[in-house]
View 1: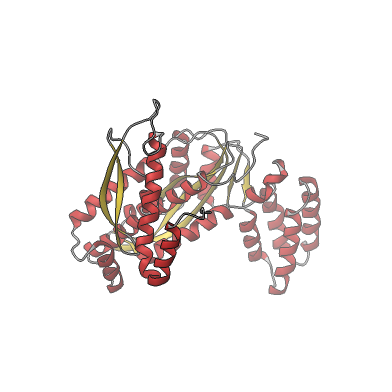
View 2: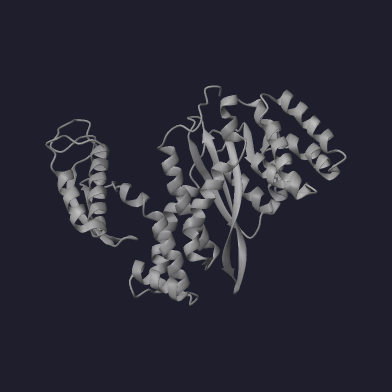
Length: 387
């Protein structure tokens, strides 16, 4: 961002930051968010301050103070009001949903008596010293309404569908269980990435994946050209049942990892990995299949189990060659979701063990919602002129 020479506000801010250092951070956040909310109100109204227009959507009506607890400190924001109602700035909400969800997860642990000293200290800092189950339930209900509406929003045409799962520890009936977080992302007709859905279940069995995939269809997912995922048994059975006839690209990254289990000697791993990369990096499918046959013949005697595995599995990773070459790098793996998983774990690491499935779903949904909003308002992920 550039400023005019006669603009003194940035210089004043810089001087205050220089004098107060990180102590000035809450005030800086307040200033930035307040300005963003005012810009958002102007866009909503369709006019700037003191402007007249017959097409305006409403009238500004001052500000209302609201103190919100953030990871930095409690900050009092000036919420712009509109006389006719119906306006609430999203600039204030986007960065706080995941913070609230994390706060609620910790608060639930505290209320249920399973918190550690670390959790209790964090909860006290975020929520205040007095926390009741009623407060937690009330706060959870407000956030859950927003997240549920997002999880059930209409989808429309999706060209590429990515599927993956991660596991989080959840307390259920007094036992700690590994809960599967099922996730779907996709690329729409504008070439933008979207998080399409998320579900929490006690495993990746076909039933759970099928329910999840059917929910995407019920929400209007259509136009699918390719599905990208790993080869989990439950996922594959559900995929064939719900999306029969849709081409499938097996994640090449996971294929390479799986191949290492069939290499008889450690000294061969680098050579085998290079041979598989040569197949995937071929200029077209015909050349990839030629390279695959050579590789199978190469290991037929020295590593017969590997050769059999290559013949039965590598072709699943070659569907990418039927699509525009410019897309290959983006649709050959589920790496885009792997990065999402890292961001989720960065947030869930604080909670360690969720008090219930709903708490886990709440936090993961909040993180994914923020990621999806960033993707949808960001740059184009793939050019889809062909479609």
